[in-house]
Image (tube, rainbow, N blue to C red):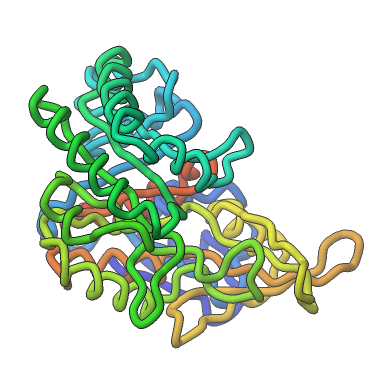
Amino acid sequence: MEIYTCRKPERLSAIAGRFGLTPAALQHCNGLNHCGPLPTGFSLLIPGGTDSPPRPAELYLCSSRPLPDSRLEAMAPFLSAMLLPPGSCRAGQLKRAGITPILLLDNRDTEGIPEPALAHEMLREEECRRVWAEDALRQVQAEGCSGLCLHLPFVRPFDRDRLSALLLQLSELLHREGLYFMLAAAPPGDDTPNPASAALDFSLLGRCCDRVFLQCYDWGHRDSPPQAPAPLPRLRQSVELTLAHISPERLVLGLAGHGYCWQLPWQPGQQAEAIGHGRARELAVSCGEEIRWDRFAQSPFFSFHDPAGRRHGLWYEDVRSLRQKLLLLSDYKLAGAALFGPGLWDEGSLALIRALLYPQPLP
């Protein structure tokens, strides 16, 4: 396996011929739907070679939409588990495919926005925590899942002790029934607490959770100036801070299925649009603009004009940046990777993740 980056606009057929591949094989490997010329800076995964399989890594997928049967079949040999929203009714199908179903519960409101007040009501009294924990266990069992993943971002620091008590209670209840207990969390802060995780006792997580999904993204986000959502140095720092509290075999690196597109020139108050990496790659091909590479963030970005003539800047993940992030699994001996993001990861990005984690030589 290797990565090829276009130094000038090139056709997929010419690149495929250079490596002794068919255009269809190269297109399928990279999940491309667009067959036009590839722009300068576009990176492709070249299958084949003599790579030895890496250390087995767990792979989790958090999907808020049903996974098509064809994609489920293709991903089944590589997926360890899927995190499912309540009411998905997919647990039985996942178990038959050899994928562990995990129920995902959080404190988001009806619009998907984290709501600290909801968490406070759940945590404020011992009886509230007991009832909530028992209800969560019953919901896991009723939906036929094999465990629970809790995601409670932006809980207020004054609820820290109450949150710790709930986590201990959930851990005891679930483990007593032979079920998994997992937690998704933003990384801890360094000198300044991270407001998304300020109420979490990471040392406690390392003791009571089977896996902790470290959500390492959104430094560049909807309300920020244009920048990489997941710059590599920030990821390394976050992993190292977390490993001071949690052993690597319990830690899973969380990656987002989206980048962001900002209108340029950016002004404070302007919101960016979340865009899936697959859509970003297709947009890069269709607009034909040069894709640039940020050496510090180890991330691609490009700018383009929309049909109305407005200029935009888009930061996303390509095969180069995904590879750099997945190398952290072996660098730090982490348990695996978890794929988060709005909606479903596109087929192209899943194909790249699968190929990067489990490279296979061509027959």
